[in-house]
Image (tube, rainbow, N blue to C red; front, side, top):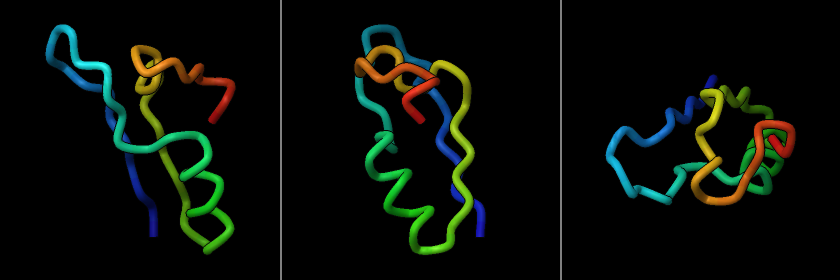
Length: 50
């Protein structure tokens, strides 16, 4: 199963649905994670961290 995380579209929104840590945990369980470029930027997570 693939789980996707889009970036937020509202101005000032700093949350992200999946953190790099939660993505790693999901991958350990056998899931594929697709994170949109820049999804975690406002929350302080770089694309490289995912």
